[in-house]
Image (cartoon, rainbow, N blue to C red; front, side):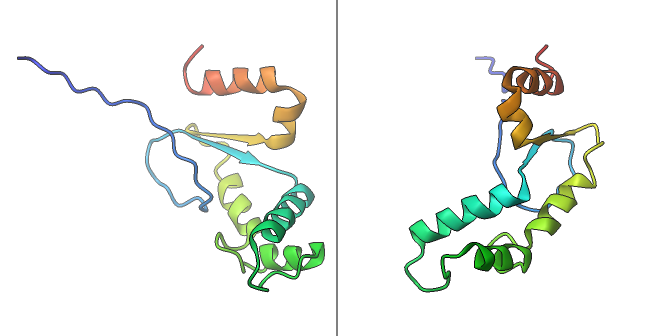
Length: 116
């Protein structure tokens, strides 16, 4: 019996800062800061019963930019990927552009992945 093993493409969602140094391809999607804070505020309101989160937007802002959330400082996180936006293996997208021109952005993604 002759068996051939081929590597299948995989994908991984991460919210980590850029520390990866391999030849994988990465698609990073950034979102408007105000929208991130608003979304995170709603998320925390829904899940938090511990009293850690007061429920207001300003408190959420302080948590995100102060690095007091699981992923650390939000600005550091985005900046760590932005620094590598021109690397051949990174496609840096904006969430708002996906909403405005999904077809165009999907074409960019397909080209980046070598599917066109």
